Image 1: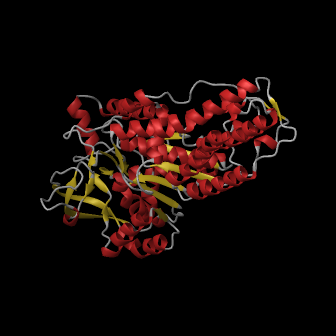
Image 2: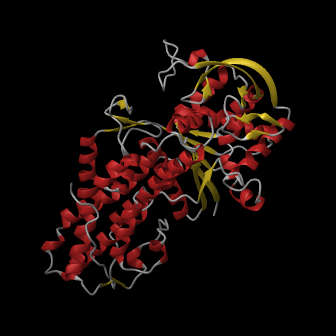
Image 3: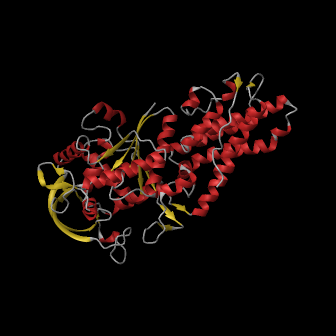
Amino acid sequence: MQHRLIATAIPYMNAGPHMGHAMEFIIADVLARYNRARGNDVFFLTGADEHGSKIHNKAQELGKPTLEMLNENVVLFTTLEDALSVIPDDFIRTTDKVRHWPTAQLIWQKLAAKGDIYKKQYSWLYCEGCEVFMPEKDLDEKGECLIHHKKPTLLEEENYFFALSKYEKQLTDLISSDTIKITPDFRKNEILSFLSEWLNDVSFSRSVDKMPWGIPVPGDETQVMYVWCDALTNYLSGIWYSFDQEKFKTYYPTYLHVIGKDISRFHAIIYMAMLLSADMETSKNILVHGFVTSAGEKMSKSLGNVVVPEDVMSVYGSDALRYFMTVWGGGVGDDIDYTATAYHNHYNSGLVNGLGNIANRTSTLFCKYYPEGASMSGFVLDSVIDGVIVSAYGLYIESLEAFDLRSGYAAVSTLIDLANKYFDDEKPWTIKDDPEKLRDVLLNLVEILYHINILVAPFLPRTGEKMREIFSLAISKISDFSIDSSFRLTSENTSMKLVTVPLLFMKI
């Protein structure tokens, strides 16, 4: 058993959640569930980034106390997690003065003691939308932010800086050698390319009169921490860095960060450099995902193409959205494109006609001919089916260990396709006069269905729970969806009884 901290990037609480947040939560939750099913001790962390001028200004615009607005937005995010069957072990807020503030201030003090924090006067272009300082080379030909399409503001302040440039070579070595493994490779190459240019030191604080909503800098009440030492330290405060070293050491270093492509530099470079400065071990893996686009375009209120997760789930259910986020699109880390027509078609073909069809056909026919159960005496699992099961587990585990959810689900699809083809080829409804052959065909189908249930559960947890009811068995491996490629349901029981359950997916 391994202890693994899996954490999403904490979303910025200036507004409610969107499809990109849903994607990130789902990816992390699938991997957390998979690791638990493999017998690992997982701590799954999400949270909220709650400081900064944009949040403070938004609250003033709404005429609300800042914390009141934040509390309302946090509820929107936790409600979305619940709706998606995303179940984190903790939700860390950067306004948490008991756990988070002491952690952020302690890390600041460690970096300062190392000589890596200093004060200087500077002028810089600042994008409030991104809440980052931007060099001109990162702007478009109009001098605007590539994401928000607005010109940054020129700021002139005296702030504290972090000596990021000091760690350029060390970071390059760690990332090149995959000691800090960035997935997919093309995101790793982007980070290495950025490092090879010239790594500048970064502003680490803001003046209180410019950004009044933040964590005070230790020893200087005229300054508050900028996002780096504030929000990025949530991965430490979320596992009680300042208060419970036993718990902290159990899950540290972070096994996996799940983050969007727009903030990959912050995690892979700034946060890793902060850990090096604090003489702490760096994170093991950084999985960088893409965006959810709408008919090939970035979702935007001005374009009127924003897709709201709750609206989609109200029609198709949460597991269908989880299916979309993990199965569709290109390779690992690519953008996922949403269109209502494609979503509808894939829901019906992949879930209704694929998974739902074989679960319903198998359980219904089995219960019709063996309402009291079937004896396993003399039954031998078909060797071809056994081989496909072994192969599916191999692909599934290999894929999910590499954070390739799409290929992982392809292994599940292999079993779904196998079962549907076997059912159509053997036509069990036509051999009721040959009880032994009928029993063997149905038991072969039950075995495949069991393994589909085990492997689909991390992806589609509500569907997994519904399928589990079919087997009517009190065995540990199916009760906790334990992934065991050597386990065979039909050889571990002397008899088999199924029950019928409502359709897993309704055709829409």
